[in-house]
Length: 160
Image (cartoon, rainbow, N blue to C red; front, top):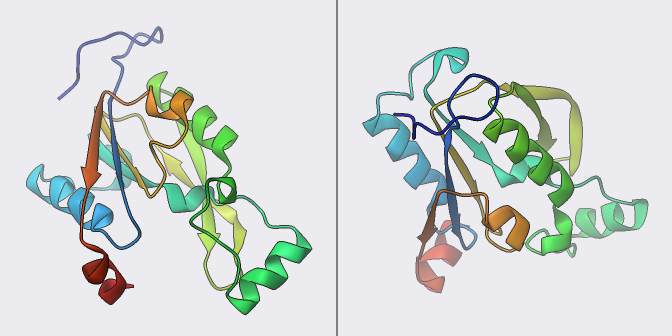
């Protein structure tokens, strides 16, 4: 499953696939189906050869004013500035270097990161999905393959 390119750590560089699309377009479902088809959905996380990461884990910490807006339902979580893109970039570089990395766990109820993290182990293929995965050129340029999931607006609204 590896692309055969070295990463400087003695291992092979994982094949990085970006999956983008609008809110509720089916990005997570596409990633889930890929994991299932490759037989990776029921395997212990540390043993997987294919892993999936969501951009949602990288929502940045909100200021008190932004938290108040979020609680009123008026904060725009679909804006590029809602994400910690520096951490996304750092994480992608760690993944490409074949390193174990930790990603934040996000709580949608409190609109804040939890103290706990999720450990991502080196894998042959990494799926990274999110609404704005291709927005920043520095991030977009790291993907070996880019998938865009398109669904009409009425379907996405009905799913939301």
